[in-house]
Image (tube, rainbow, N blue to C red; front, side):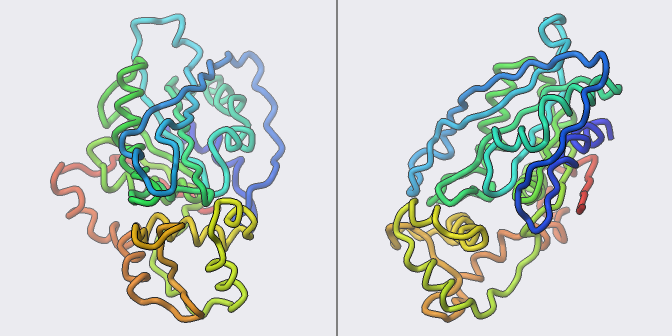
Length: 299
């Protein structure tokens, strides 16, 4: 509950209407709050190497060290991994949730000191969906394995699942649910805020102009010119229906020539966490472990 309270104090600032990212007014600093140390590092992700989309395997990561970290060299700390939403990266997210002020305030109000890690998972189409794909690279393994290993070997962590939390907003909430359930041996607490994409949905009949705009995309610049929701569909397709035989984007869309593609939607359905959660005992059978704390915030 301590981890949920701390992350909630920061994530609550990032809720925005209509699924967009907006500027928010920051909280006043708590009197006497001690400064955290913010480190900007690169973490190499073997799991992302060789992807078809050209995503960098060296990922930007922000690490926030608590006030006592430099003063108490013998002390070890729990860690929260916080996942940003679609269309932004970790650096932009820190501005929207007013880090480090919100984190310093939480510590000043009595939250247990811990390390906070914010990895950047923005891609050509504005978001990795925290999934594994030959097109984007395996961002699921990057978060659950590569990043955790790096942090545990470069910082004074408590290197066990009971001392790791995973949290996220929107696309990051989606990533938290999938990664947290599939890697219950790594994370003991999950906190999701306004998670997207939890259950399968039918594609319906897409507007002809929208379908034409998607099919016309050939380059990253074309993708960048799309409106939010159409670009998000490219990101979802890159994560859920990669196709190495379909250049230049190496993905299959759920609608083609105005017609729904059932075979593509069939590939999207297993990516949704809601069906996973109905079989969570089976998912975690290999480890015999479930997240010890599960919290979801929807507004």
